[in-house]
Image (cartoon, rainbow, N blue to C red; front, side, top):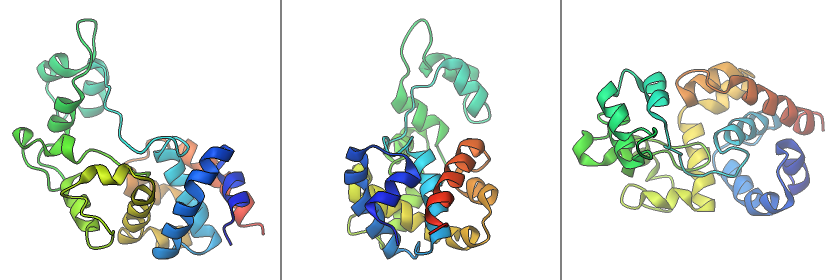
Length: 210
């Protein structure tokens, strides 16, 4: 059973973050079947990584020109990266960056639609794209398509993560104890895998040994 104490020990959060997140995390887990110790360990490890230790509920887009090309070279041109990425001449235009790199993906419209920025990553698992927001609308007590900023509120930030987790079959992958496959579903690759593994090892040591 998840308690405030073992949640804090499993995630390494401060007392303040424990008090802020535990009731929301516990309610979200119960709502979406994240109810075994192994499922909970995997969930806490992944959302812990995605939210920078439960401190971030909105995607940061302050990319440098070079970082944009390195990370999104197939989605953004060199001219666009120079115009909107952070460099010696100007700060990053985060709104335009999101509109470009997320255009025509995950249910978003084109660059001019503004959907990329409107449906940028939010919540403790970084829900991204209009289609992913829309898929949650029937599961959350909020219209997050019309009001996407609701996913930055504590309860919806947690509920959205747990709903997305269940919708993408991650309870079943957690049952298989497959951190790499879970990471690929969430990230599209294996970015941050070592941190996710480290967080998982810590969480399993607390939750799966009792």
